[in-house]
Structures are given as structure tokens and as C-alpha cells.
Image (cartoon, rainbow over the protein chains, first blue to last red):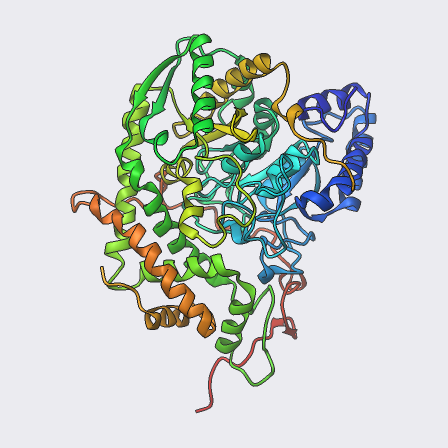
Length: 499
Length: 98
């Protein structure tokens, strides 16, 4: 019997054997969303009509015996950074309030072609800048484990939707950890594929050399199934990799790590990491050893500089990318009284349309790119990027995958770090190096921290286009953990009910 | 590296075409000083013999066949426009008086 708590793979099996229809499954999810989302606020927009029509179409095709993709009829939540034709897309910003994109992103096209039912758009930090979803212009999302805490960011809406059983699958995007850190603090699975593995066409750009869309789910296998739907070369994205998609579903099902070398990154487990995060991380390492893997310590000395380099490169690219929000062609326009010049209207609109974090990063990026400071800041950061890639290359020569805790702490309280940008940036200390080098990264839950009972994330990193290796290790570790716990970690999450 | 002043921030805001209130400028100048202090440490390891990386995966010019593909209709392209007239984007004046 399938329910909203089933995995996507179980839902797909129930749909294909005919024990449930996609319309029934979709309605069940909307009913649950209506019940719990007033408290969680994972969604910014629900497309009930469109989703039910899509579900009915899949059901009709199935009834006619047409061949369907593996996830056909399974519902999904879409991060609001990804454009979907005709559906309000805000990117968490007032700047795009009311905008309905005239085209589909490649990810959405692939989801539609695979019959995946898109329930609606999920909340996020404005333009994907943040680690808590508190920077959304539409109010924060609440962590289903404790509604007074953050769900991570920027993709807190997608992660919270999974943890609250509002959807079995979600799409996230990850520029410095925005898929993996929310997964870590909500007890869910999130994967940042190799840069270029999933098309960026229709993904509203924040930092183009770092942005990467990826799958979010409640299990490693579900993430792999979604990964194979959205990945692949796209002519519409010139940075898309023209090579076969790694066989991640097969890898997730292997459940075998015998003889694999797991590189434990020395620099990502010391100061600043919560004790309970480290203890659960080390227990997970023991399970990998029990399963026949070999641990090797690797050192990546430049990681200590990754955060600093990221906060120059990402704002620099953002200051350029967000120049497109000029109030001329789409988005809001403020102060156009027939007297003011285009430039004055532009300045008023950007004052009104952007929130504090976005302004902070645009100003920082404008500074880092300005003549006289370019070499010292942006230029130096690009060199650090080279050094980070050398560190990774050396580490991958010793190990098949690298591992670390995903985030230094469990979920913190809403409002706790909002006035301290530097403290907020530290949440991404373990996830950022992956984006800087363009490699793959996954977070999966490895337990609850003893001191606060909140989920801890385990990060697995794999070399570029070796995404299958992180799925292989992730799948095996998850199986060992679930067998130890006697069930999914989300079984321990509080039950949310309508108030 | 020299500390960043409130006037510097005002100039950057002008370059970035963002109107800022006095309070915003004061606040941001303080924050920028702290953030720049933290990120400036990239200079410690950025030796002159290290080449810069702008992109993680080597890609070269990507071109496609020069053929006409379906694109947005004028109505679709203008569907999000704040103002439009005669199938065009309507914008405030871009040139001042002579």
C-alpha cells in the first residue's frame, strides 16, 4: 500500500502495477500540503490544476498501455529558481513578483517528458543567496523537525517539502551548498551533480561558473532516479558536458563498497564543527569500514581559503548576472512617473526589488571586479580556485571518494544568524570546495546529534563525471544506517498536523 | 588593503544602479569592512606562478548550426514587460534634455 510517506521508487512501482493512480497520489499530496504547509511554508505557489491535468494525462497513457518513464506519475516540488512556462517564478525575490516565464527550463522540459508531476514552486533565499531561506522576500520556511529552526538554504523549501512528506522528490540548485546543506539539516538526501551534468538553461543565474541543479529526495535511490531524468547534454547550455550520464541508478543499487578507498578530509572536521555532528560522522565511517571500505586520510590545505575565495567569485558573478534586472523587459518597475529617466527608474526598482543580502553581494562583487582591486580580490580568488582543484586532484589520486560532515552544525534557530553575514557564510564551509572545483557532492542523513536530536548530514564527494561513485557509497552507507536504525531517519521526525 | 569608506559604498551603489538610503549606506559600509577583511586572506596563497581558474570544467567555444529554430513570439517576449507599446518594450527616457 503506497502512501505519501513511501519513497518515489515505491510510488513508481505502485503506479505501474495499478494499485494507485497518479491523480490519486497527486491529490493525496495536495491534501497533505493544505494541512501542513501553513506551518512549514515550503511552497510559494501550488499549481493544482496543472499538476492534476499532468497526472490525468499519465494515467490515461498508462491505461492505454503506452511505454512510460520510470518516474511517470510521481509528484515533485520545483525550486522557484527554475523557470516553468506560465507558472509564477519569483526566485524568492520581490523583483520578479507576478512574473510568469514564457518558456520552460530544460530541467522542466525533461521532467514533463518523463511524466513527473510538478506540484508547485518551493521557497528559497532570494536569488539563491543564503543558507537559511530567511532571505526569501516571502517569509522563511520552517524546518519540519522543529518549526522554530531554519531548513537550510538556499533550497530550504525543497528540503522541507521532502521532510514534511509534501513531495517525494524535489529539484534544488547548488552554488555553494544550497542542495546539500538543506538536505543535511532536514534529514533528507541532496545531490549536486558534476558541474555541467545538468543543463542550466532556464535556471535563473546567480554565479554561472558555480550554479548546478540537482535532485533532492528522501533516499539515495530516489535521488539517482531523478538524477537520470534531469541530467544530460543540452545544446542550449554551452557549459553542458557532452558525455554519457554516469549510471547513478545502477550505482545506488549496488550496495557494495568492498575495497573502495574513502578519503576523509582532514581539514573538514576540526574547529567549528559541533560535537554531535562529528560523532555521527565518525560512526558512519565505522559502518563503511564494517562494509569493507578502507579509510585514508587526505589533506586539502587550500580548503581553509575556499570560503574566502567563494565570497569573492560568487558575488562578482552575481553582480554581473543580476544586472539583467533592470526593470525594462520583465519584473517589477518602480517610480516610472513619466518624468524620471530610465536610469533613475532602474535605481529605484533595484532599491525596492532586492533584499539586503542580494544588495550586499552585488556591492561586494562590484568592488571585487573594479579596476584597482580586481587583481587583489577577484584575481586572487581565481588562483585559489586553481589550488583547490590541485588539492582535489591529489586527494582523488589516493581515494575513490572523499567524505566530510555536510554542515558544521545542525539546524539553528530562525533569526539566530540573520544579522551576522560572516557567521551565516560559515554554514557552507564544507560544501563550497565542491562547487569551486566543479565536482560532484552528495549529502545523506547519518543520524541525529545527541545534544539536540536534529539531523546530521554526511557528505560524499566524487571526481568530475564520476557521480556514480558517490551514489555507490551513499547507497551502501544508507542501507547500513537504515538497518542499524530499523527504518528511515524521517520516522523519528515529529508528526505535523493541522492546528 | 585600505578600509572601505561610506563614500566608496555610495559610489559602488551608483555603479550597480541601486538607490540606497543613508541608513543602508552606513550599515553596508560597516559590513563591507568586516567581509572584505575576511575575504582578503585569499592574497596569502595567490602566488604569481599560480594560473587563475575561471571555470571548473574545460570548455571551448561551443557553436551550433546556423539554422532558424522556433523562438518566442512578440506577445510571449513582451508578456512580462512592465510597459509596452506597438509590439515593443516601452521604457522611460534614456537621454536627458540637451
